[in-house]
Image (cartoon, rainbow, N blue to C red; front, side, top):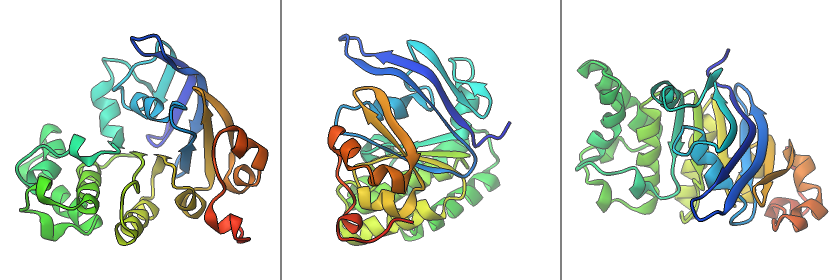
Length: 248
C-alpha cells in the first residue's frame, strides 16, 4: 500500500458541546493528487483536517493513512506520513530560532545530527528561507512565518501534505511564493482554502463540504462549472472563470 494514500470511511465527529461537525464523510485520495477542500465557514473543513493525523479521533468511522488506520497506537507512524500546516503559523513556531523549529521534528525522529542538518537545510531552501535560519520566528512577517511553518513540516519528509488556508492573509508576492511551493510538492496534498483562484490553478480535484457532509467531489472544472452547487454551498467561481478563462 502506498504511503501517499488517504481515506475517510464514514467519519462522524461531534464536539463536546454537541455540535456535529462531521456527519459521515467518505472519500479517498491517492498518490500524487492535489485536492482542494472547500466550503463555507463552519462546513467542517478544519475539523476534517485535524482527523488526518489524529489530532481529533472519529466518534464513528475510520481514517486510513497509507493502509494504516489512525488510532492512538498508530499515531507515531501516521505523523511521520502526514504533515499538517495550520492556518496560523504561530501554532507551529515555538522555539527561539527558525533553525530550532525546523529541526524539532527530525530530532524527535531520532535522526543523527548530520541527518537533521541535511533536513533543516533542505527544508529551508525549499521554502526560500535559508537566510532566516538564525532569526526569531516571532519577528518574521506573516509570509515568512507561513514559509517557515511549511519548512517544519517538510523537514519530516511527509508523504501527504495537509494545509489549512495556506494563502490566507498574505500579500500577492508571499501568496505566489506559497503557491509555487505547493506546486513543487510531488506527493499527495489536501488543501482547505477559500482561495478559489489558487484552487483553479493548482488542484485537479475539489471536495466540497456543506454542514459536515461531502456535497460534491469531482474534477475542478466540473465543480466550478456547477453554479447551482456553488450557490447552494456558499461559494463563488474563481475570478479567472468569471472573466471567461478556462480551467485546466
